[in-house]
Length: 533
Ligand code: J2J
Picture 1 (cartoon, helix red, strand yellow):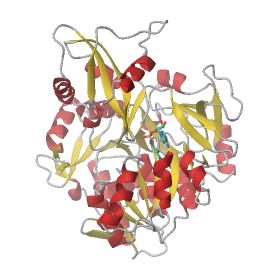
Picture 2 (spheres, protein in one colour; picture 1 turned 90 degrees about the horizontal axis):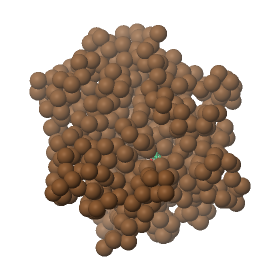
Picture 3 (cartoon, protein in one colour; picture 1 turned 180 degrees about the vertical axis):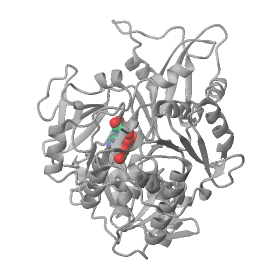
Picture 4 (spheres, protein in one colour; picture 1 turned 135 degrees about the vertical axis):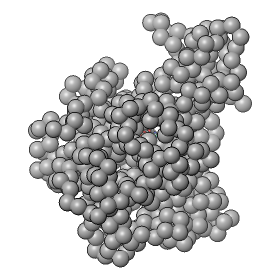
């Protein structure tokens, strides 16, 4: 057997049967993407000066798959992939899907703390990184990672390989590969909301192929569509809602932008005739305000926005400017709810619409897990054809994160409105949502607590006008207090990703406690909000 299955929680047989019988799961594998398209000469991918037709992408993916097989990468092997929005990310992903090897998608800002954990958890056999991105050289990081993880036999670099091997040299005559089964894990995504170390989400070929198809249908994405990947394509929102993979699956064109900033994205929108893209809320006002000044017409571009709280005023402003908007609630875990293109502006501004699939089961429950009457605010529980049944190799965590009958506890507070739309109202999970980037509070606290001058600490979200939330750390010192800059440098030295570094530090004599002795984070959040500005 494929040992990736050790630690994977599949859907129970009766659910798998139902999802197949009802046509959600169709026995597809993701390696088929780019293979059978209406027009092989059509442009599949635009990245910088490179324009690859479907025929070229298909050929490159086959050659990379054969080259990886020649290196000894097998079906079921895990490969840590840390690539920004470059053509090689797509080529490599298709190659791994065809081989049945499993990408573990890290984000570009991740460093040794995150990568070391992911490599160890998955037993990854290879690591793929750029030579440099955003001013950072990944090759010394690769050397450190390999030294710490003996199972990591191969380091493949996009660009100048230095002491390692260039991904471009992983290339061989295409060969027949056994390939994966549709119910195999296709890849892993990082969870946006956890306690302790980051958790991995296994996505199967069946469930992700369904997500791609359903999202494309819902937004009318077809072979004429042009998707701008402005957010990182390694994140679920841009990878597959329908995103990069869903656009390629229907024969459309994908345009890769290195960042979502107007400097990078606007030229591409005009030059390539972009028809849709995905944004997190903080960028939306920036885009809409700058577009007329930079003479870019955003009206032909359907904007998919979600991932963090979107203020209704911003949504109305965007729609008043003539832009089309769909408002999403999404999780890498597979939960997706969104407003449809025919929904009235009030529904788009105030809600995240309806579930992706008719087979999605949503429950709203109180703190005791008891179902609430429609309209009341409670935690959202979800079960469905693309919502995972367990995090990878995390049995103790899974026992808490799922109900006994298999519903994912999202940790998000929602209400279902009278007309059946989902409206996110808050959160009970201990996560900070910094403009769409998720920081697990306990993960950060464990790192802060490792500083010798820290007696106790608590990380909480504080309001921020631009990002929605920022990170504030309350700290009880042991002796001489630590300053913010010193703490940030300490955390960077521990290999923590830059977006998880605290924005603010408050030194206190002690942390407030609830009656049962837990740190009173609600009070800390209130204090943090009050002390603002
Ligand atoms: C408030 N909070 C939201 C929203 C997600 C599409 C879009 C987003 C993601 C994503 C994604 C929110 N308002 N509209 O994967 O495919 C918060 C919730 C949720 C968490 C998931 C996609 N939309 N959130 O953001 O896995 O707290 O996925 O549980 O990164 O983001 O984060 P993540």
